[in-house]
Image (cartoon, rainbow, N blue to C red; front, side, top):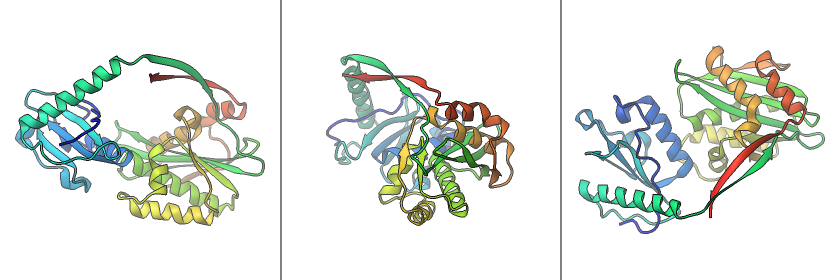
Amino acid sequence: MPTGEAIPVTTANPFNALEGALSTEFRLNFRSLLDYNSPALVVLLETHCQTHQSVKDDFNFDGMIEMAATGHSGGIAILWLANALDVHPVATTTQEIHCHVQVAEYYFLTNQSSKKRSKSPIYIKWHPPDYMYYKLNIDGSCCPALCTYGIGGVIRNHKSNWIIGFAGSVKEGTSIQIELLALLKDLQIAIQQRLLPIIIETDAQAIIGMLKSPAMSFINIINDCRSLLRLLDSPSVQVIYREQNCVADKLAKYGATHVQEQCLLFGTPPPFVMSCYEQDHQGYTISLWIIWFS
């Protein structure tokens, strides 16, 4: 039986109500959840078990319990983090598992409501790299309406000047996989253009951990990225806020919606990124509100 904290991710249905866990949206979200959180156990409550097909084997993940929602909202109901507790498989019946879900959700919600909520502003902007350095910003994007996926990246110098950018389309993948492909492409461009030394920024926290520790998923892409990083003298890979990554985000979205080839290079800023690029160049500051509980 799990001892310690259980963290409910959601009790709302995060995937297509008609397709359930077989939907593309669910599979992308769930793969990203596994990559980012490395959970020890996930309980999946399904509302359409009459057409149930097990998805457990599709994700190479053993710590999943699939069962009927039976009156509960469908979705990824509860998540146990491996670093928070040890999981012993005692709760095996539908009634037992539903009780765990309800107790964990009640504990989580009441624990949060008893805490004092505070918020304060922070001020962020894109920062140019140090003198004689180059900075790589990368991002991935998905266009659900078109079912297309894109990658994008930009390399700038210490004067905030544009060196080169790219946008490209990729086959269907998870958000983490797409971010890794964007990193791989930007590293290849940096090597081809002999742009050294560099630092790298991404708004995808998960890929930083995957590059540093043994990876279960996307091992071929990760190994390729690691090899190129070594060729570039193992540069720093840093996480930033999404709002600091506007230019790369615009390029990735363009790749998902307008680009057919794997990589379209831009020697100068294209019109669709010009507003973000000029704001970064001028040191434009954005305010964000940070909320925490104490």
